[in-house]
Figure 1 (cartoon, rainbow, N blue to C red):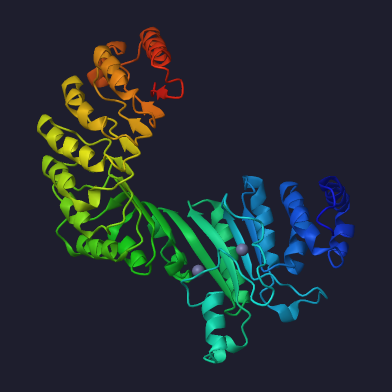
Figure 2 (cartoon, protein in one colour):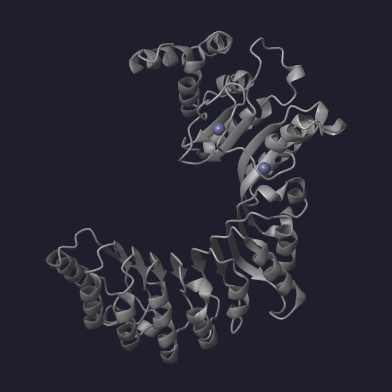
Length: 461
Ligand SMILES: [Zn+2]
Ligand SMILES: [Zn+2]
């Protein structure tokens, strides 16, 4: 179809195909390639499972990405149908339109097109193909080109299925996992299930299932509840992590072998940009973690880590904490003598820090007054959170006066001033009328400072 054909005509063609599913499926053998992408988008959005199943079988491009199409719960059946119909054994395909599809990408990513542009027809290309697994198309075809192929690879037509897995114990996820495993089995080794983002809730439930995946491909790994020893055995199979998040992880001792093993795995992750340790008891041992963090870390979350004065001091001297873009120290107590270290840390980070969270750190009026001169040097700050700290209204006003000149700062999550509570120490109920007056006063100050682009938000629950 000519590129100049008006979109309206294309829409009409797509709608007409969708209105008669069986005719549309038959027409797939003959319709122009250019119609496949708009038809796929419309069929996905409209939940036309049979059409999608048929399209995957005869998809005339090298790759197919869900991309920015939004996946809702009702779409799980569509995803499953696409996997079931992904041609992994071409000999079984009787269609005259031979399947070209080699990479099916079911991840929801905003920056991807439905199919990658075809730069040459001789060597098809996909921006998202796997680079790490020995079962990837690149590596298998590389071996074949070099004539290096064993019996195992000679008959293969490698195919990749890109997925993100959120293993939360639900039936939907269990069925999805079972489907991936049976599809890989059906392919007799030609299908590589490439998982990039792996999130696991209660790791012990999935220890066996995870043996099935080549974890070299994972770049984001998150665990909520698990033993550090189990996490170590998973990490030992990973090499290219960019983000590691551990919530409520148990281990016996900060001087034991399990923790030492964890540090050595951390040290290997040269691409690590984000480390998120929540409720990870690190008191007096943050230095160990910081020494093993690769130098390129951008995002560091340490809430509920029970940090001590010694930890803050080390953080303020650590070369790994001089260029962070995000620092979250929420829910760690900050004593008076810690403030000097926090100030040094903020000055060290002043050239890069964009997001700072110091919620519920027992920061008082006098403490925040000490921090302000260092804080206002962080001129790239975009988000600041210091909710749930015992701050009075006059100091909150002072903080706002100091922060409004930070032109990049757009979001401030501030604490409800202590006079709005019956009893702040026990987080008594909030007097809504007093809070409304506070909010009005802050809004007026923002207007006077001509900072209507700045949002001051607080938690009321
Ligand atoms: Zn692609
Ligand atoms: Zn892979």
